[in-house]
Length: 123
Image 1 (spheres, rainbow, N blue to C red):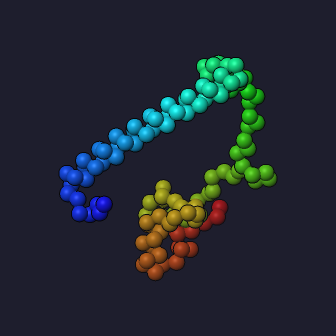
Image 2 (cartoon, rainbow, N blue to C red):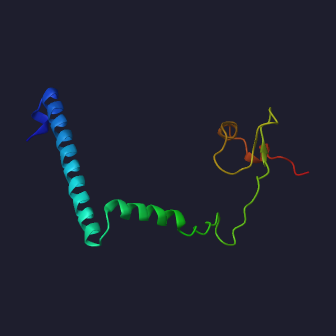
Image 3 (cartoon, helix red, strand yellow):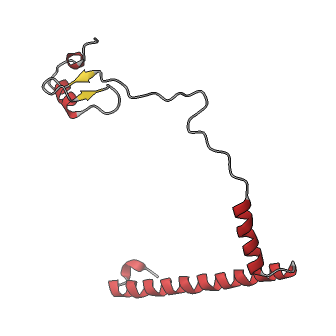
């Protein structure tokens, strides 16, 4: 079947047929699996509801997992990095020199001015 030759109406009709076939097969597979599981439980002298209830109880009484470590061993978490550069007209705008450059730094550099011109004097 060449899908590119079908009209939009035919494609939608085909889509609904495919969806209904998927639902039918999924339901059939679910029923078959349920029958197999019931037979396995019956072979062991249990009902499927007993097995499911037992699994839920085991899950509740299972030992708690050990907590995960947040960072690699030996790695120490650092605080906020102090600002190294300040906007020439607005001193409240600063940049640490890490990560993406702010637009005001990029425009400063585009004018051919050195980055050192924005450096905050060490005090």
